[in-house]
Length: 120
Image (cartoon, rainbow, N blue to C red; front, side):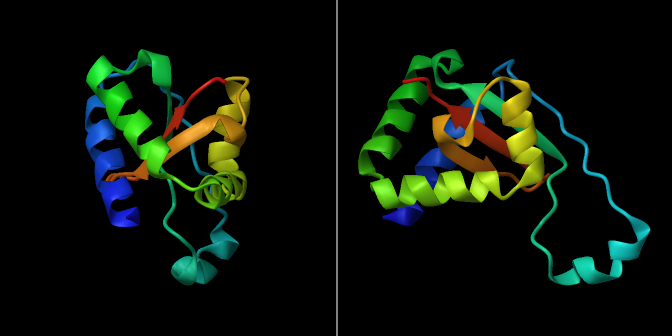
């Protein structure tokens, strides 16, 4: 089921790439920590925030389908993960948003973390 959610989210994000709501957050890296980064999770080059209402209708339907299949525990884990990523939390805060408004997240091969937000 998580694989289906991931595949659906990735297809939605292919459409979301054309959305205009982008936020770039550069990653700073100290020289002293370079050696210890070998076991660290992948660094994000850019964080992109996309509002649900800015997606094309087809993409909105796909996101709604993913949301409907998610369990509350999955959504809470997503929010906790986003909060633990300083660049993501900072990008959301810069737009006046919080992780609780993120409904779908995806990381592409180029290091762009895309967060789709939905106001309640």
